[in-house]
Image (cartoon, rainbow, N blue to C red; front, side, top):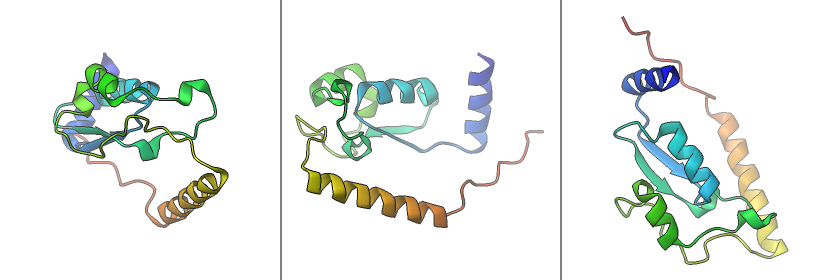
Length: 123
């Protein structure tokens, strides 16, 4: 309870505006636990954030099932539409292209400040 109160205080000072989650159920549940109780946070899903399929648990559920269990992530119709089979099952060439894109993104992120300075303490 104390952590939730601290989280709300931080959110009031430096609001989270957008939460993008992988459509995997475990990721959506974690996202809900982390910021689900905060107001004013737009929530959406992107299949680009899903892991490459290594395990049977990496196979997703249909958009209809996800929408029923996690309506807040599909509320405004925003974000990317999910195909019926949105999880990745590509070829070796597609895996190499995805790895290259991830590495490029990681290199660009290193050029950005790691984190913003914290907001001023409440008085």
